Image 1: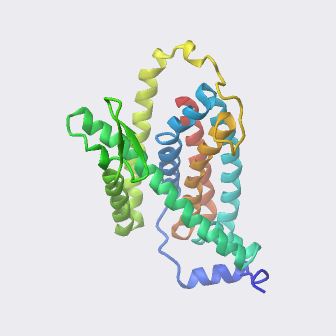
Image 2: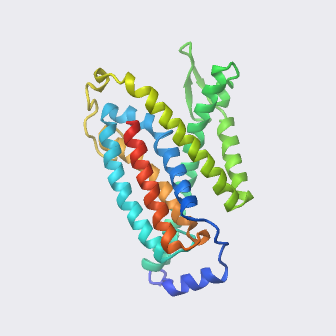
Image 3: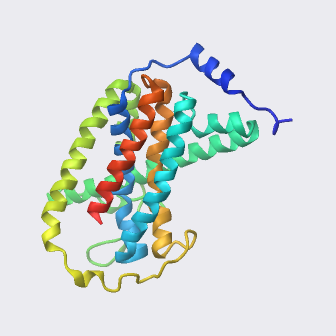
Length: 283
């Protein structure tokens, strides 16, 4: 019975209409939201992870992940335009596959966003603590990593983490922005995305003349691997695909979007195009 219980598209739209959120996001806001989420995970956090797995071959990893992300973005853009309500994959699963599958997808989404938020917070905390340490204000090792992490100090000794203080503050700040309201958080996101893109453009301009072809040998130190192996080109591509969370975030905002049938596809495809161009330029 539970596997057969589904919610029709008309009922989903009618329910959303009764308790609909205020529609105040446009195509630009959605594009900035997607770029912010995709670049935050795909470029600033996962590039080093991919390099450790695939070496110079991570260039192929970005291409493979980009193709898969393109297919994901196109699917999301079509379904989100048809069903412009909050809930994302949970709602789509409820309409097509039934309540039990939707329940499992819903919990998977909660886990996905928790892991994504944690990963981005930890990644940005590393940058922030590096900046502070460069100016003589670095935090103690115990406050830069979690209780299950080990840290190699400058003198070669191993230290145990206890609490990532900066990651906690960053997560708290983002939560506060969301509580402030969608329109305000969208404006802050747009400003941060502009800063990110400017920083990446400056980095590319400064780093490109220093490219050394000797660093690309061997091109595939760990081979191609497999998506589940955790190493090689395909293992790195699986990690980079983590960036597709950004497309899901755009889809989730469908109920708060003005003219969603037009703006959702623009936001998703615009996010995809920006991610592809920036990631290829970086690698």
